[in-house]
Picture 1 (cartoon, rainbow, N blue to C red):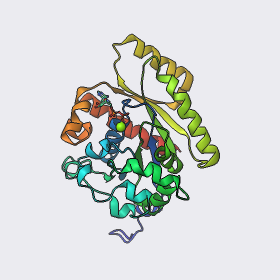
Picture 2: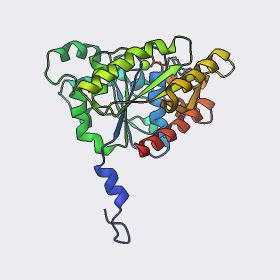
Picture 3: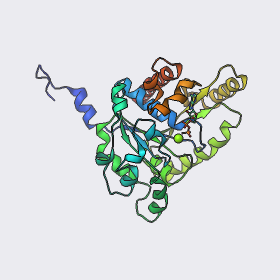
Length: 279
Ligand code: ADP
Ligand code: MG
């Protein structure tokens, strides 16, 4: 697009034609901080100037509600996109609360209806590539697409993994944290071999971290030793403001920007921007 001086604004053109980087936030365990990571990273990325689409792939719809969109009132959701009865451009929503908070991102929401997609998709062709195809149409409108996965390695998660450039794995530094990781790593290997050659684990994100607990410090050190640069530098602390935010329908980054948890997610957003530049 010509600028005031008549010169061509190259950065703008590049952004318009470049496909967004797509990341799944996945871990087949429930309650490990996937949704908290998804909505706060989305808000953090928006805060540092990135254009973000958040996709809720969990029928619980927590990421939808936690972004200020009422899942019960949605006419179109990711379910319609997966069954190809709507495009993402038709189904995506914006949130007044996010706009008011100055950290706005688009939301492809989910509700209980999505639980049915699991069964319905089995019958259909290209069943694991539905989301990928839909994202191809709007991908250039965003810098980042973040996909909040359900706590399973289901057809829904598979749709996420098929279109992603990478997986972000939130984990608590507990004794059994590494056990569940084996299944996820094997699934990612299989998807990479058969369906999506791009796929890799971008990083393990230590969440709900309490440095006063010796065991957490020890597990954290072990993670660093075993996984080296696959462990993100940023650590997300246990912070009550992050847990309170969903009941107000906003990410912690919007709810209380000065809280330790919010600040950590903005730092993490910047770390992701830097990683993507190096990809
Ligand atoms: P998942 O999506 O993996 O099931 P959630 O993101 O919903 O996990 O988190 C599970 C619970 O832990 C929620 O009640 C959430 O508010 C809380 N929580 C997540 N991260 C933090 C944190 N860093 N500090 C305090 N509470 C957290
Ligand atoms: Mg969740």
